Image (cartoon, rainbow, N blue to C red):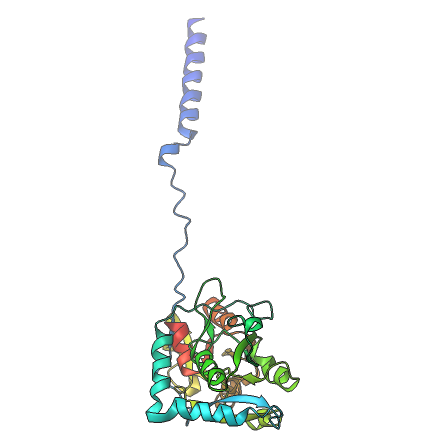
Length: 296
């Protein structure tokens, strides 16, 4: 009997040891840090890769044939703005540089349509069409996106005041601006627009009022070393982004023909910037100052 009890006690102790050995010590549980390292989404400008040639100046667009007789007054105001080595334009640049910059995720007629209370004014209204996703030329200066700002906006205000008119601003995607101008939805368009033969079929142009820096190519900082030459970019595997119906889209297609078929064209620049950061596109071609605004 004693021998049986001794064997039973030994068995119980053995089972206890197995149970203790299999118990998980919660205090020493190290599943590891599941938090991912932050992804570097900073953007930079590719330097000294492309020579884009001479930069075209920006002009005000009016309906073909200037049926409302606006060009004479517009060109008079532009002459004043650009006189004395562009002294007034430089004042506008300084003002715009001091403003906060906000750009919408979508541009439509739901955005604020008027600059000031045009209904309370006896002045004739000058309707401006623009796309406020293009700093420093057109954007919003407040998070609520109620205050239009930018070089083009200030130029338009000056033109309207010079012509004794009240400015009203209408928002629209850039790629629809020329068509809407032709349809009479606006009186003028200021949206960093250069002269092109295609646009000249649908509208008339003012004298130049501003010239931007040469175009820039934006890239994620982590990928910048991949693109040292034009040949590095001019590959079918490289996805280039640009804004629809812009001269920069045309310039990119001409400069990088092997990559042209795979280009991604979007209506809004903020969409393209997001796609660049997320890796949907590899590179983004923009007007010089615009690209610097999104990098900064």
